[in-house]
Image 1 (cartoon, rainbow, N blue to C red):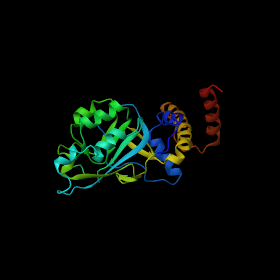
Image 2 (image 1 turned 135 degrees about the vertical axis):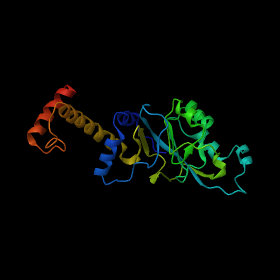
Image 3 (image 1 turned 90 degrees about the horizontal axis):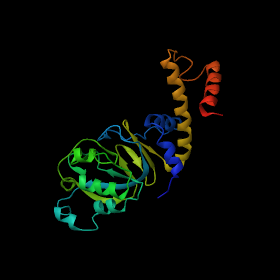
Image 4 (image 1 turned 180 degrees about the vertical axis):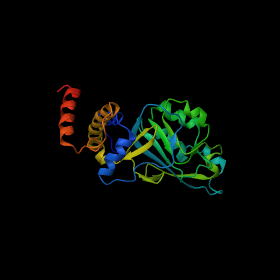
Length: 240
């Protein structure tokens, strides 16, 4: 797994998924927002971490009885025990929330081990309990049945699809109240730096709009006079 620097992760914690989406769109990446998922609880700290993946396929009854949970090598259990500290467990549940991707015991174990978050395009059981844990968690909707009824764990830390987005091990996930963006690992530092500058500009725009200024020429910034004004504002803001 590629490891993104802590500096880059700290930068990404300071920007929104909306800003990241715009930044990636400018680079030609249009499908990086995981669809149809939401945080179990709003207003948690921004989730940032490298993707560690778990992939489910449709369960087959002769291979996926409840007895398989006794196997210490069951891939769901392996993923929970081996997901690296600071990483995010990302689960491909085939966008099917009729059975749970995981429950509160497994998510608690991830939290205690120092994992930075969990994301599935399916659902969690014990969702109210998971919502109160100190770990960001994202899913489509609550689901009570065990994953064994519909899902069979088949692979860990391989490329997956989650909510219609390709997720490769080591990609950087950023999650806030709007949802989760997937940032390709190879451009994470570049994206983080650009997004910080975009966020700074958005602060300038918001300050002006709140003071009654028109967005024409300001957003997007096409007025040279306003551009000069922004340059001076940025110098003052950064204390240069």
